Length: 586
Ligand SMILES: [Zn+2]
Image (cartoon, rainbow, N blue to C red; front, side):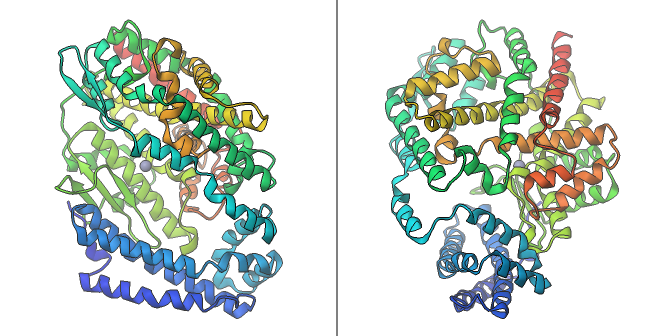
C-alpha cells in the first residue's frame, strides 16, 4: 500500500550518484553555443538534450515523490529545490538554442532531420517552433518588446490584492457563533449549514471584499486585457483569441462552437437547479446552494474493494486495456493512505519511459473509489504513450489530459448505476456527483470562457472596461446559462473578480470543457458500438504528444469544430438529470 521507490533508485546513494552525473550535462550542452549550423553538431546536441531530459525527469520524479510523502521533511524539499535551481541554470546556459535554430531557417533544420533518423522525434517540436516564428519580430522590435514585458503585471497585482493583502472574513451565524470564512473552507461550511440565512452570511462574508475593491479589481483586469491586446497586435495576430489558441494550433471555431453549445443547449442545467430547489425545499436556489447534498451515505469501501470494483467496471473493454489498468494500480506504484505530512489530494505522476506513480489519500468513501479510477486513467494514458512514442513525444497536452481519467469515471458510474448492490441513496449521490461534474467542468468553465471572450472583444473594439461592464457580462451569462438572476444575489455579480484563472492565464479554462467533451464523445461511441471506437480511443492515448491536440482528437473521431462533439455532453446531462428526477420522485 506504499510506493516502492526502489523501482527508480535502489538506494539513496544511487539517487545522489545520478544527481551528480547530471552536472556535466550543463557544460556539455553549453559548449554547442554558436555551433548548431554544423549538421553533426546539431544532431549531437539534440541527442544529448534527449539523454539529459530522460535522466533529469527520473531524478526529479524521485525527489518530488519523496518530498510529497512528507512535506515536513526539509531535506527532501531541499533536494527538489536544488533540482529546480539546477534546471533553471541549464535553461539559461542553453538559451542560445531557440534563436540559433530559428536563424538556421526551416529548410536547413528540416533537412538535418531528414538526413538523420535518430533525431526524427524532434521534428514536431521544430515544426511548432517555425510556425510560431511567424509572430517573432526583428531583433530591434523584440528588444523593445522585452522592456515592456515586466509592465504587463496584472497577474502580480491580482495576487497582491487577493492573496497577499487578503484578509480572512468572519460571519456571525444565527446561533451567535462566529466562523472564519476562507477560500478553502467556505464550500464545506455551506454544505453543512441547514439555515438559509446562515449560508447567505457565509457567502457574503467571502464575497464582500470584491465589492469593497471592485474598482481596483476592474482596473487590474483591464490591465490584463490591454496587455493581451497589445501583445496580439504587436505580434500580428488577427485577434486576441487567435494569439492564445494558435500556440497549440487550435482553430478559433473550436472555442466558439463550445461557447455556442453550452450557452444555448442548457435546458437540463436549468431543470437540475429547479429539481434541487424543490427537493431541498428552498424558497430560492442561490448559486452557492449548489454545494448542498441531495443524499448521503456512510457505506465504506476498502481500497481492495475499490480496486476490484474498478476492474469490474472495465470488464467490457478489450483485455490489453484491462491489463494496463491492473499494471497502473499494481502494488508499489500506489501510495494509498493518508499519513502525517503527506501531500493532500491525489495525482498520477508519469515521466518519460517510466512506470507512473499514483498518490492517494484514500479514506474509504464512494468518492475515493472514483478517484482510484480517475488516477488510474492518467497512468494508463502515460503508459500507452510510453509504449508507442519515442521519448520526446510522450508528454501530452492539457487539452487531452483529462480524457482517459474521466472516461474511466463514466464507466464506473454506469457500473454502479446498473448494480443491484447500489442503494437508492447511493444512486442519488452518484447522479449528483456526475451531474455536478458536468455543471462544474463543462457549463461553468465555458461560461467563464464566454466571459473572457466578450471582455477581450470589447477592448479590441476600444470600449471602456469598468466593474459595471464586467458585472453586466456576468449577470447576462448567468441568466443565459443557468437561469439565475444575479441581481437577486448580493455580491455574486463580482464572480469575475473571484476567479484567479481569469487574471493569471487568460483563455485557459475552456480546455477543461474540451477535454471533458472529448471523453464523453469517445465513451458514447464505445457504448454505441461504433466500429473501431475502442481502438480509436486507445490510439488517441497512444499518440501522446506527437501531434496537435485537435488533430489527435479528429483521428479518433472527435471533431472539435463540430457541434455534435459538444452535444455528447448535453445528451449525457439530459439522461442523468432525467434519471435523477425519476429517483427523487419515487
Ligand atoms: Zn485528472
